Image 1: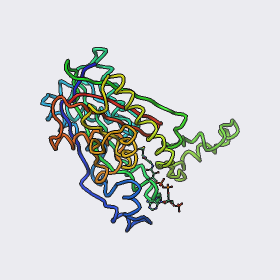
Image 2: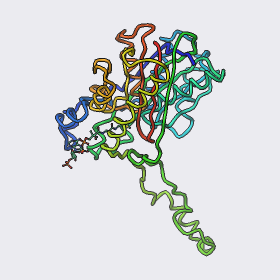
Image 3: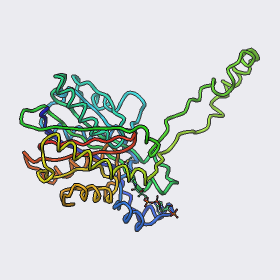
Image 4: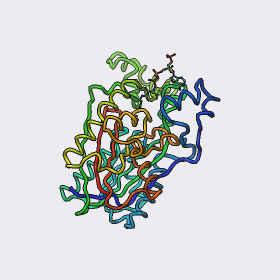
Length: 343
Ligand code: ACO
């Protein structure tokens, strides 16, 4: 279904933390981080929240699109680090923007969240249920990583990116997506565990009859341990998955749309690791200059990576109407998606 991105926006936390600064709080080096990943610094939320950054990015995108919030039919937010279990970040954006006619919900597809959002928007466009969608990726990964685990915490940053997408006759939007739950253990983060009074003692008649249940329930708060989990990653498995899957997905989306890689102006890839991006460029036989990056100053911001990068390049006025671009995301799930569209 033809569609076009008509406005982009992004928001990053004020605090910037360099690799050199990380050296002071953990056993790592700027040299290790830079040579393995390309990352030199990242923005870390202190006062900002996933919602506050998402709202800021969305407001900018809506303003740049030149539309009124009431014109938005659909608000989709890719996030694994919303501030609340509910309401969703998407509903909070809706309230803040007063986009009163929109349907709003979040998507859990990790670093492919923005691509999954575009796919859902496209499906709504095709079914006639929507004409204008606000698709957002927003993350505060600094609260999901274990700051004692140097192999993961140095990789991630916080931020949000947004795009207003409109059904339009002269655009192109073709998307492929995929999931492989069987390999999901490569990248995990558990949710809060079940810890009601009922899991602490066997649920037997004798226990309840003796008054022990009431006693334990009353002291419940005193012995609940902080049991929140942190992000865990098998880095090499994720690396192999990305290098294998992303070129394939991009090849498929271009093939199905009847577009050659040479006709693409820019490939906007999820900003996980410069070595992954170099490997994808090589496999597609495309010059690395066609792969914009901002991971050097932002790190990996999961679902927010692709829309933030898109906004940064858009702000530099490097995109002209009619340019063909590819967007690709991949991450936990495992999940992936690739889209080709005209600017
Ligand atoms: N500083 C210094 N040394 C470190 C650090 C660090 N921050 N982290 C790990 N090391 C050490 C390890 O302890 C290990 O030491 P050892 O050899 O003495 O045991 C050594 O460095 C090598 O560790 P590896 O994990 O084997 O390093 P590798 O070369 O695989 O690089 C990396 C790790 C950068 C994570 C790489 O595997 C990678 O980029 N994978 C892809 C990950 C990714 O892209 N994830 C995101 C996609 S999904 C998403 O975005 C949520």
